[in-house]
Length: 160
Image (cartoon, rainbow, N blue to C red):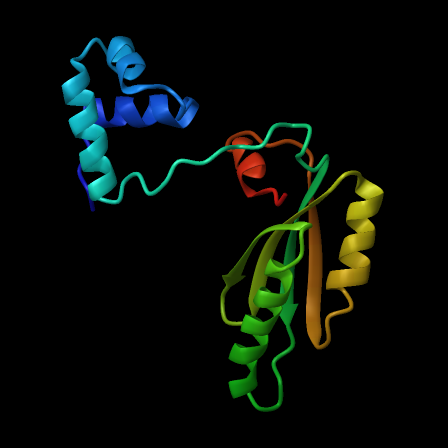
């Protein structure tokens, strides 16, 4: 694990808030020389702490209705097929624009964050796209009413 000191963490906080800031602006905010900030950012990139710079899309493009969907696959007669089927479901869901994130959970489970422009369209997407997948044991939908921490992740994950 990479060790970060207070200056590294301060630089990361500033860049996380606005990655468009110049090295001069960051140096001014932290009351440090530009050369120090430039060196630290370069080192953070080399160590893989900063992988890339990206944008978080604004509220206008973000889905207005969100839900976490838990999908549990039925164990097939030949258990070796379960692994392939789970990977197939994950790949299939990952291609859909309404699916913001998809991950495996345990041997036979999948968790997805899905979104749509309203609750009706979200429900329709789940009913017509997820619930119809063959050999599922269970599909549970947990509507997200409010995000307490990490609300920017939706703007980061949304597909354009």
